[in-house]
Length: 615
Image (tube, rainbow, N blue to C red):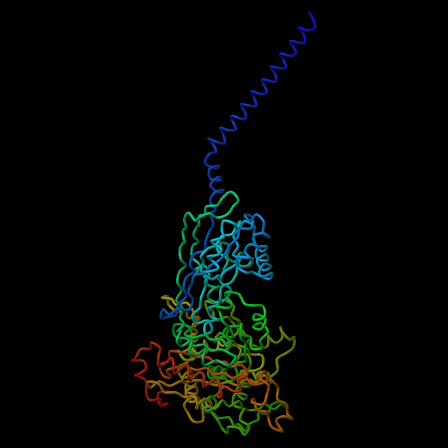
């Protein structure tokens, strides 16, 4: 066969093979096109739409917080904001420079924006500026076609009409953190409750997020808003607080450091909870300057601490009622048995001084409560013993959380033999029992615990759980202490006389409103040790001491005296004395309460003229 015929056949086979490969490739391409255009058309149509339309979630309106009468404690207002989705910004440096020219941002502003962007995932929108004026917001919208990835929105900000008086109770909202995302995994928006009611009722207040559709061009710049669903507003939250009384109490506490708690002794409703000094919630929610924040942090009076729930204080003489009950329950002393007080109680070579230098003379239990005789309770302490004192304190909730529907409260300290061994690896001394009986030493409680204690003394021995959220549910009674009515009456009589008899430590703070009087007990707590030498030369008065060396001032009480409904506890840090400062403040608050609260008229009018015959 000629050579050219063989070459021709080889060429035809190669041509056929090449044609087959081309045909196979064409079939693959055709199949792929069919798959993409027909089988997967919905998917790619969605992707194409996503390139044209930016879909983002928007936080819903936060629920309002109101007081027991519907008055606003926390509300929402319009907030002009700028958001950025970092991955949609072509060149962040250029965008920030453009924003700086439009809004007159300095280098510090741009640095803060960068830090905020770096702390968020690149695919999530970040609010970089807020609280813009209408003029600033308008300028951004006019220049929007030239701002890559920038999204101006009308958001909301939290406003507090009574920012100072409710600061510790309501709390504030702030920029969410990683900890918030771990605590609540479905937070939408840049703000979340940071403390107080705002934090503890976050899920209820924040509502259901909405969705916003914005048309964007080929390079990701917003063109126009197509549609927007605002979402579902958060639920409003009604509190047990009475705003008028809260404002009055906050005003009365101005210039002081401490707290006041007023609660309904039957329902546990907290009518007033004030901690002083306070701070401006609106400033804190919107972001403070570093200097202002550091001043709050470093302030010696700790304005950021809710002292009603987290302040721990020796209860002083307000604890004496519990020691008296412990003695009565086990028949360790007759109520009319007297103890002689000459101003000094001597035991085991030590001297324990009564607050009255010359002494009170012979006093019985009611006298001792009325005049707050320390010597009587020194003697009673050794009869009762630390075990009974510790047990009684725990029955009244000391050393445990009250169960209020707010997080962050402290439980305090109830000392005893086991506690001393566990914490100091040493035994208990009788001298420590003596000072515990007058509410000092290792014993510590919060003002909220003192209010719960006072409520139980007034309501017949029911330990009621305090609450801040207004509820239609029945109040929670943590325990029925089953005290003898006669024993409670003795303690109540002593508290009545402490306020309403001339020899009572709080007599200067007695009140009479619509025939209602107040019963109560003062307390003064030393925060420094008074040496023997100082006692011999004369104890330095509080007025001449530095603030942090002055005694704490306390008062607990309830109204009306014979048909109790409200209990109060007042603690003034370094106030100098319960009778001098805490009792007058408590009186003024209780007068305001009796005049303005919605008490049933027959409850007040049916009370007697204040004589102790009914006590």
